[in-house]
Image 1 (cartoon, rainbow, N blue to C red):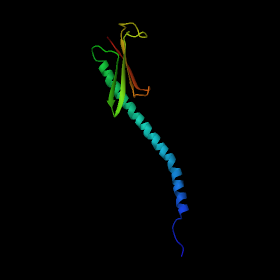
Image 2 (cartoon, helix red, strand yellow):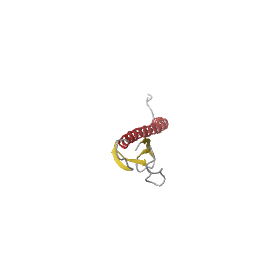
Image 3 (cartoon, rainbow, N blue to C red):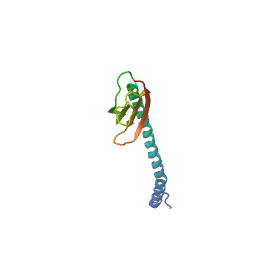
Length: 122
């Protein structure tokens, strides 16, 4: 009587072949998760930049500002820069219109995740 079934060698060969086929798929899936997270981060940065720009464009005094906020489980740095002649490389004070720039970073990286620029009359 002949035994029907698989030998240990056949099982190991089958597992090895399956592993060789699955490993590249794991890399593709992992890369896609990273891309998806980057898209989510950029959307959050844009939302934070829009909110900061809305504040900066409201009537009243606007000034250079740097603030850290906690959103979407991460710590973000929002930098508002007003081109108002207060720094050496800016146009003379009283230049019309006033330019406001908002940049959003995800510390500790120095990469800008979002940047908005708008003109505001003083």
